[in-house]
Length: 224
Length: 182
Length: 75
Image (cartoon, rainbow over all chains, first blue to last red; front, side, top):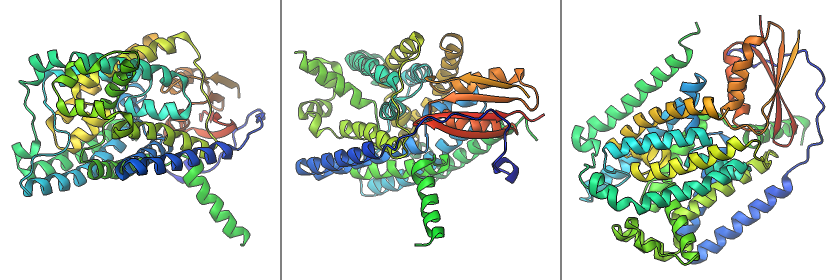
């Protein structure tokens, strides 16, 4: 961003009439007290649960502060031409890939199984992703985005969580049918198993890098 | 404390608490957070499987028997988690943490506001969108987090396939949004 | 030097930005568009878009969680 773009500009305009703003320090302190109390309560049951609680709080803060939205990362290139969030997700994927690979390879070296989210891939993946993609764009938030916006006070997301749960339940009830016809025959494909550890790891990082360049080009293709 | 020092502290407060963080910073932190989750819980970050449990426990409250759903009968670990209840369910605790964390973060910036529904079309969009996401995530073994983010980071092919087709869905959704919900 | 106003309160992303992009051809150089928003991500993507297009942008928080974005169209 150049200096001219960041410098404060004096836009000619009618004077705004700011309403009285109140500090939300009360809400903030109450929230901190609740967070701490639940953290202590959960630690009595199991320390692990308390750690998970604080990880969840951390995720909520990161998502809200960075306005991080997976929905926008997938939709904005199509609707508004912006790829800034798309590129951000690629960074997140690259960072996580490095850590995940370390955990997975360590476990494999110890003679353990492949850990992580390696699920059956097939037509059902494509159908599910398309349904999910349509849903997240019209409702204005994917799963993490819906939770984040519930916290920010959006009534719309408090409504969509209801059918989100109903949809999940329907999917769970039909799990047997989908297993029989799709999941059971579908392979779980772990890329290092196909391309070798180094090939998959460096190949994936390189692919993320290429996609990053491509996304940047796409956003600025019309400007000089 | 000099005025200048106060000014510097105020600047830092503004950048950290009041203003939005840059996307790249959020991205790095999410990547690290997902690694932490993987280490702590032995599984990567996922959001939507938990929603099945929420539905199941609500169904139990009204006297239903979710343990007969094939999701639970065919997956013994899931049935085990169902019997454990919400207080032993890490996924529920994490999802509620995300809601509370987002509230905390918005309130700390004095930006929390209850946003009412503006038009009926928003209700229709929210209801339809939620249903599609709920069912879709079951078919794809996760959402943008479980299948896309954690799937790709796990170097699983299903993550990449999800990534390609989520764009197809987003394209169709965008057309619908512009046509009916704007 | 006309001034236009756009009410996007209560609209979820990306509708505020789409409304701005739709309205934009109506503005002439020097005109100002004021958008009222309460969706925090619009606070990020509208100024980002306007700056990328080379226009002047100012943001004012008028109430808790409510902002006015001023965009001046450069000629």
